[in-house]
Image (cartoon, rainbow, N blue to C red; front, side):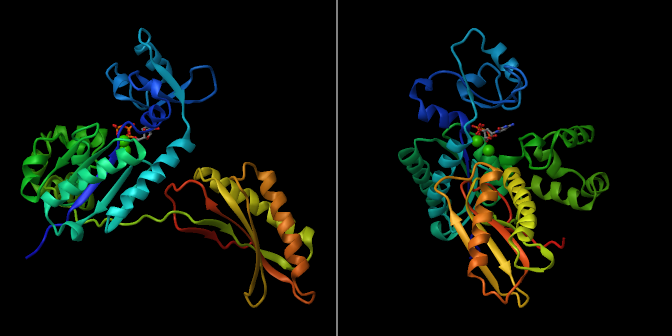
Length: 369
Ligand code: DCP
Ligand code: CA
Ligand code: CA
């Protein structure tokens, strides 16, 4: 017998705000607004998220802080700056719990994940519901954070289900319930149906997922093109074969340029090395990675490699520290290198990241300078 896949989607409730409330219990019953201050003027910037007490007043992600303050002017509300270290730490802890339950695991951003639990529950949705409840309670017990869950036969259905009941909700959609579950929903519940597409579909008389599922396929393909049209058609019918897949988390960032000529001269090497420091440091900043380990490499003609690394107690906070460390490491490495040898390429690598945000596995660039 063909068993259905069983996929759980987990989305953490009002995540940044909930982390803040966990750390400071006095915030528990107040509206909490977490803000990204731009620093331009006192209240310039946007709301990252708000707890449900604040949402009652119309405060939500993305609105200007000034507007949120206006909405909450008569209320005892807390406005807090973002504290990414806290959210990263909580996220990593919860992801570690989730990962243990999944046959396959896929983290999406800081506060969402898919778990394929098919073998564990033998394709049985009743067992899956029990498992999902257990996971939900486990997270409350260990991390004091509530999450909402969706259980479905694929990622598409599980994700939409997870958003149906929040906070601390659980929505289970069995394979035979998919059609009835999806049909009444507005089309913009589907991934990839944004504001423009919603308007375009409305003009075609398509308002709900059910409308889209029943819409003439040829006309749909003409309007949106083959790939997108087919995607909408399948999505509206709850068809999604995409696997739950581990996403690569960057483990290191390195640049390994070729030197203009072979050398063992420290100054020549450092001139090149400092440029690389700037590049990798910038890249780590873009990815919002903190890193603790610096590795330098000397690559010889036969591609044999000499390397030395140093790991700091805390993430490296500035480019100057990185450069100083790189200099020290190359000095040591050159002192150890047999005198008859010269380096053809040099490398600087940073690793041991303190935040596991999404990125490719190894971001190495072999560049010619
Ligand atoms: N976030 C942000 N800016 C946005 C949207 C979100 O900084 N425009 C951040 C803050 C959120 C986190 O991402 O806490 C997760 O986003 P969600 O959309 O999942 O929203 P929440 O977790 O805050 O609330 P919900 O309970 O609706 O999931
Ligand atoms: Ca969330
Ligand atoms: Ca989310």
